[in-house]
Image 1 (cartoon, rainbow, N blue to C red):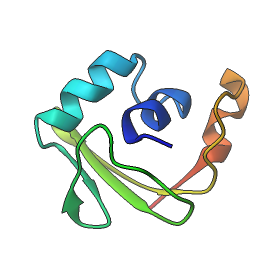
Image 2: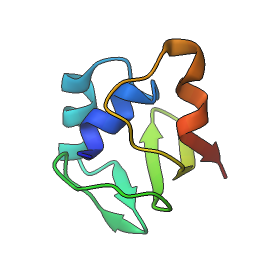
Image 3: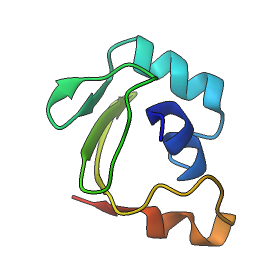
Image 4: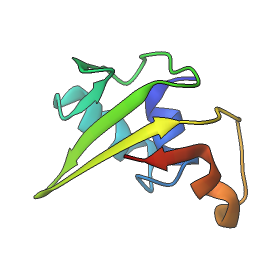
Amino acid sequence: MRLDKWLKVARIIKRRTVAKEVCDAGRVFVNGRPAKAGTELKIGDEVSLTLGQRTVKVRVLATPDTVRANEAHTLYEEL
């Protein structure tokens, strides 16, 4: 699944266009490497992103196309 879409589905970022902009600005890393919006994620990848003063680091547990809002936290594990 594309990185920008996963960030939206997991509800880490609310809108996919914002997720794409954050990725293209170089503030998202997958497994320690800078990642673009089209980077393909797979289970087990570690995603790190900087949002303002806060840095979020998570491990991908699932990559479904859609998920309910109350189940979104099951897609990742915070590190």
